[in-house]
Amino acid sequence: MMNKLLSTELIWQKLAKKIDLKAFCKEQILANKWDNSTIELTGGSDLDLLALISEGNKALETVKFSLSGSGAKLKLTLIVIGKSTEKFNLKTICEHVTADTEAEITVKAVLFDHSELDYLGNIAVSADGHGTKTNLNCQTLLMSHGARAKTIPSLEIIANDVKASHAASVGRVDDELLFYLESRGYDLETAQKLLIEGFLRDALKGLDEKQREAVWQNILELLPIKL
Image (cartoon, rainbow, N blue to C red; front, side):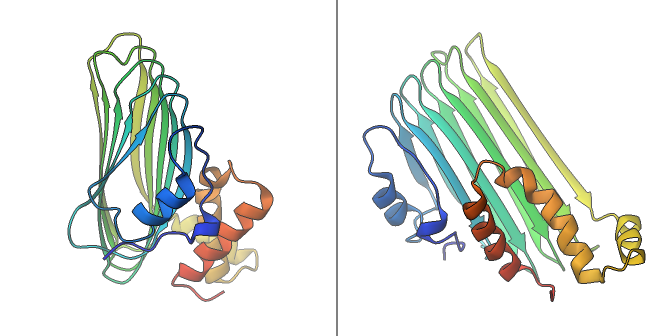
């Protein structure tokens, strides 16, 4: 079963050539076909995709992006909200097949209760991928002592003249900061919401105000806290 993604009106994307992305995303991503899908970006393509994942899965779910044309650009943002005993087993692959392609992949996870995230992020730059600019960043915020996360970013680079980086971090919610906010008159749930909003803010920075508010309202509905 596919993880729940943002509804069609809450996915913003732009593709310059070859693919009718609105129809493509509806068929390939919103119709339970995220697993083992490959999305090819040809020359001049520009894809900006945001997905909200809120239901766990047992089997590994993989999506591969192949930047096969010069000038292709990808911006992928995954926001994971975990609760109860849900387990998320996710993998992204980004292949830079030719020269002068760009990719920015951001994964932000907020895990409650005993939920778990197992994420593998692979970036591969072929021998022809000169001039590639690519970055993978995965950050996880653990909202309870029972939540767990394992995130493994990896780079496979054969070409020269490449700018590539990756980072991963897992941190537990700061109890002292929660205590400070409560001492300032906030109840626990509101204090948690403020911390989560601060954690996710940069993942939503590319959206306009209306889009950002729509995504945030969807996130609030998924949080296992009363507001």
